[in-house]
Length: 90
Ligand SMILES: [Zn+2]
Image (cartoon, rainbow, N blue to C red; front, side):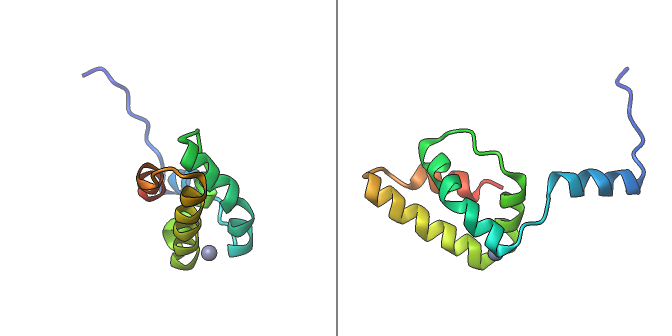
């Protein structure tokens, strides 16, 4: 094996992790959730690490996102299964 390995210090790892997961408040989350759900339903690129991190840590917002997704899918007459899987794929 010739692959070089970088030695990250714990501090570096911590900084990288924090940069990838900006913490959102529930209000921030709520402000973005409609657009996010539209992207999930459309199977469009929906990278949003901050929102993802919030949803995986906040069951209230996760439940809200789930029920909004189901409502939106019903409104649009589309099958919510794929979007639900994308919502759950953390
Ligand atoms: Zn929340």
